[in-house]
Length: 331
Image (cartoon, rainbow, N blue to C red; front, side, top):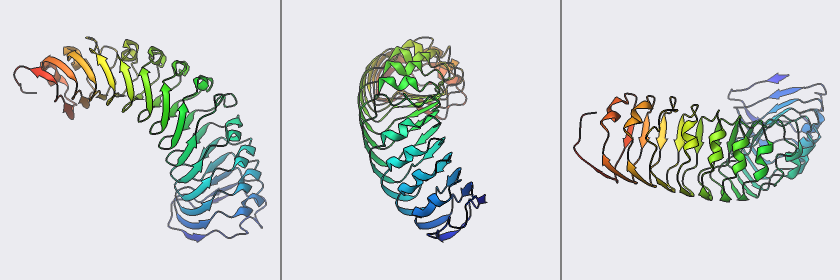
């Protein structure tokens, strides 16, 4: 093992780095100042199981020869200046559990071969310029996948309805892309999901009531899209929820009078810039852990509930640009 993470080491790696390291199993060099290209001869370290080169200054392309490291379990390349396409040869890594290639300059599609690695648990390709659509059978060969993090790219097309075949997913981050169509109802079958980020896409239609089946969900983010209709009551029954982000849509209807009855852990309720109407429920005080309440730029009427004054952990309160009346009171 060579483990030298989180220092200020710099310079380039020798082109023959693996020539005399036939037994090396782990090379940990993350969080340094290394630069230059990743040596194409890296595949001569035939026994590598862990390769962490993330958070450096490497440039150039991802070497195709990495695909020859068939014992590799962990591959961290993100937060560098790597560019070009992801080599399809990565799909040869049949023991790979974590593939991290986020925050770089990668372009093109994710090779289908990567979605055929059944050992994969985590995929991080966020914050690149990756494009294309996701394969309809994306999860057919990914029974162990727990994290699919693709946010801030140029992906388009519809979110595959077969996403529910990734039954162990805990984090699904598809926000800030160009996805179109509706939110698949099948997402409601991902009962282990904790984090669902879909916002800043071109999704439209109504929010599926099946989202309410996600009883472990902590963060639900569907902001800045073209969603219409009401928020399904089933979502307000997810007691694990900590953050709601529904702002900048065309959602309408009134909020349920017992909105907070099953939301003891809610910290953020962000509904601004929609078409919600009716009164703000006086039972809002039952969300005792609220820190951010953003209801501005809607069509709420009536008075500001005095019970808001019982939200003693509140840091941000946005109620403006509504049709609220009555007298102000001391919070």
